[in-house]
Image (cartoon, rainbow, N blue to C red; front, side, top):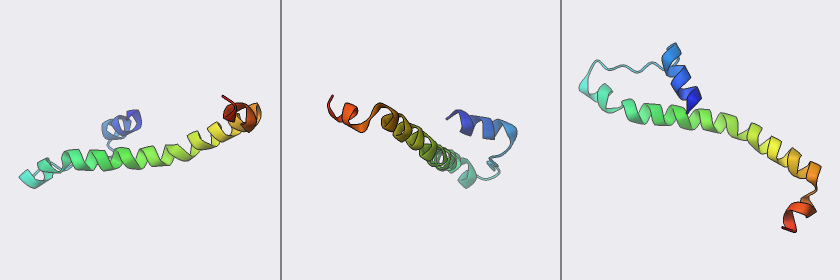
Length: 64
């Protein structure tokens, strides 16, 4: 969410609000942008989690 807000403040997200339709589509556009940012960050988090699980040992985590 912070990345989406940062992109909006820096002008990375162009949200036209000239017509009524554009104003109605602002929320879906922001939501789609948030989903894209989320999916771009998810592989990094997944890799870190797998690396940590490997470091601890997968058997240790399964035994809980």
